[in-house]
Image (cartoon, rainbow over the protein chains, first blue to last red):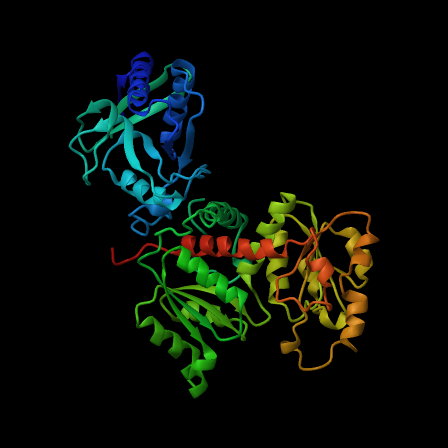
Length: 179
Length: 310
């Protein structure tokens, strides 16, 4: 299995900074915005963006939470193993709010479809946007596109694109893995 | 620990500690779900569940039904009083006829111990035991343990007391298995006539003096007198039972410590427990009911296996 690094720690930081900037352009003081990190892998990115917004953009009151979409997936009972959930840490109501879903990699779009259903259980948002760090092009199975993206990649089906957070040596980085 | 070690939930006896932990962890997630504005998830929308209640039930039936609805399953309800069982149809025939309508899962309560086991061998569906005679009532024991854990944390080395009609109680047996699996010490207390012979063989202590037993315990689970299962007199009078085995405020005041009070319901108020105690802050009786839905959602979710049609 070989790894090719797409973005190293520094490049990734620049990318995430840019994403946070783009968010502030559209959401001003974030008063009516709720950031939703999709469990498990969108949580880290959500935290990083929240910190950047607080530290660099003086946004003090940001509503955010982590949403687990396991019970809303469309592949339950298609595999031998039961799909086990992560915890949902989401005590907010999204009624009439501008929701931003945050995830690391956008691939088939099915996670986002499940998230669109899952978020309904917390109210009817005014709008929903999607922010991803990596957009895998030409692999979508549903008509879903990101509103904010860090990097766009074209890879083969047998390759995986992953984001590694907090590696001891390399910090945060994005890599392609050949199976 | 990605799935349960069993294909049916017939009794706690067949589960291991990992299974319990998995069920409790999944129930945590469902407890969050049932406290949301919209309390429903679409996970089981292609699953049909038949609730076969050959014996009366209020809360277990409602709790299962609600759990199934919250998971978006389709439900068939059956109660023996309005069915062809009265015309002499056998259990397996009844169930096979229901399964012919493409049912994936059967929740069964039956007065004969072993009825769910029989079904699990004879029919092609996932079976969940909702109480079989005086044998087991696994989901009740799971929700009892789950409720205790929420109150006092891990059960390891905790002292749990089960009081009352142990002889006719399926709740007692399932609870004993579940509590011991989690490392708790279990005692039973009640009139000798209502304590099964050889129960010590299960590693359970027997105490006939309620005051002594209460001093020992951290949690007291007060069982209901199962008058419907008693064909003879097991104690002289309800008044005498109340005097020796009823949980009253006076008894609790004498303890000088707080204990958690439980009851699986339905309560005979003024017999095994007084209203004052049942409604006190130490009582977690209504938590048990709320947790019952989350636990049953978890069990059904975890047992809903791969659908072979896909």
